[in-house]
Image 1 (cartoon, helix red, strand yellow):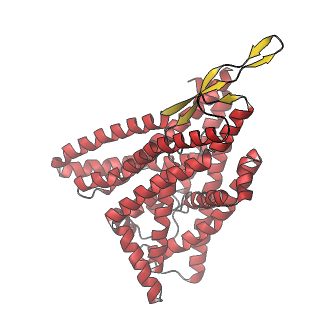
Image 2: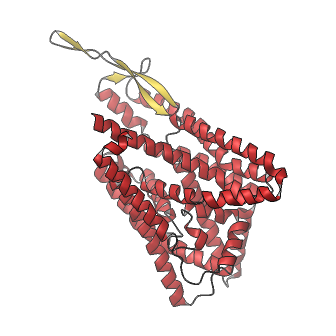
Image 3: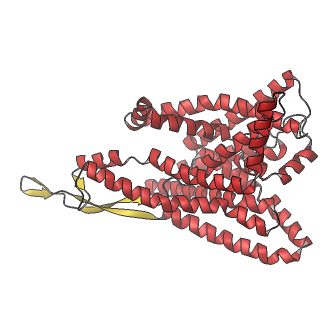
Length: 418
């Protein structure tokens, strides 16, 4: 209610809602020549396509012009951040040139996302043709559809950027959030129909509901948990007055990466499968056999779940290393005359903070990894119910995005009060 009293914040919320409605309209516009029956069969039989449908904001459910979602942009962001850690010049852009440097790196991510979207569009069309979802297209039609899909992904990326700038919250995360929420009515009806046909599943669904509540509570707890590092400011005598000497603390979050590792892991684990599916029909026997082998590896439930878990844990550490720089923090503390009690300023403080972050990140990374693969375990007890398997990752994303959105709204309200 306080947020709606602020005219500026009210406009931002209204802009966000309009942008999300526009996204849902775009997600309802299919590319030409789609076989709806074969598409529904493919989505119901493949868990991988179910995950991709979430990742694309449910744009895959009818092969819309935004079927790739913001996936290419996220993949491009991963590549740019990896290069930032390896190239000293780009690292200086991020840490030393402030907002201007970060804007330049963001522009690199946008430019890289266009060729990635084009490659993904061609690979996806070829894969869908091999599955009978799309008719065999000529070169002209293939290029036309690929350009349309690439333009749709680029338009969606632009809408996400507009939400971040003129709306409330992170635009890319909100687009994925809106796609997940739009599936709730359909998934609920499917679960109800399945339960009506077999009431013996009622205890299982009750257990799943209880696990969902526990997951929500766990995500909130881990997201909000922090390790407080005590900080003391040295006393300074100026004239007849003594300044400083105050004691405070440096809050280090248990999971500083939020939901980003899940999104990163999904983007990495999905696109190789799409490319492999497209290459499995080429005339070269070596390439085709290798593509079939890759598809078989990704279709193995145990291999897929293990790889997913490892990627989530690895990306949690990776994103934390990108966003948290203990050297810069220790230098800032030293400049302001602050120190950690019992730890010498400078290099010793840097190692101390790095060790703390490494230990607490392990807890957050393992939690995200377990929640990510928990749906695979639940699926074994629901006789292969795909909607349940997909729901765990979706729940994790939804809860994290809602927490982040509420925090940003509260920050705007607090700013208004001051």
